[in-house]
Amino acid sequence: MDVSEAIQKRRSIRKYQGRQIEEEKLDRVLEAGRLAPSARNLQEWKFVIVRDEARRKRIAEAAKGQTFVGEAPVVIAACATVTDYVMTCGQLTYPIDLAIAVDHMTLKAVEEGLGTCWIGAFYEEEVKKVLNIPPEVRVVALLPIGYPDESPNPRPRKEMEEIVAFETW
Image (cartoon, rainbow, N blue to C red; front, side, top):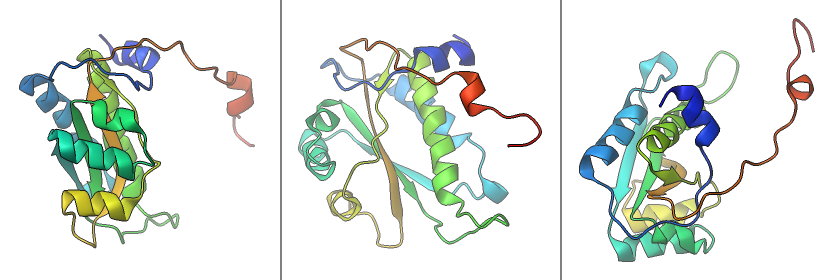
């Protein structure tokens, strides 16, 4: 599968089969995140892998009760370890860098026959308690991952003319 196909096939999966993810597949998904670019090559991330069912259920509660989060066989908490670096343009690097890394993982997951759903709706302090994450670290995203048990249709997308401008606004 090439990147274009993975981009086109990716869907937010909220229903997972009960089967476990093979270690090699999970390793390849994590490797895709590890290889992502980051500002000044800071690589300011740590990925906490959660397999324990009770802990996954607690994370689902912290994710505003989205039960499907805990039903995935694995949840990845994407965390930023450097949270104060600001680029010349005035933006913090960590949300951008972690977004790139998580997106790499979502696309690799598709290639591996797995599904994910990017979760940004969660109570960070609750997730940090469940996973014993230090106070100075930020949880940027949760990524439940598993074999899909649904095949959602593509969501509507705007036309290129609506989102692209050449040379000037």
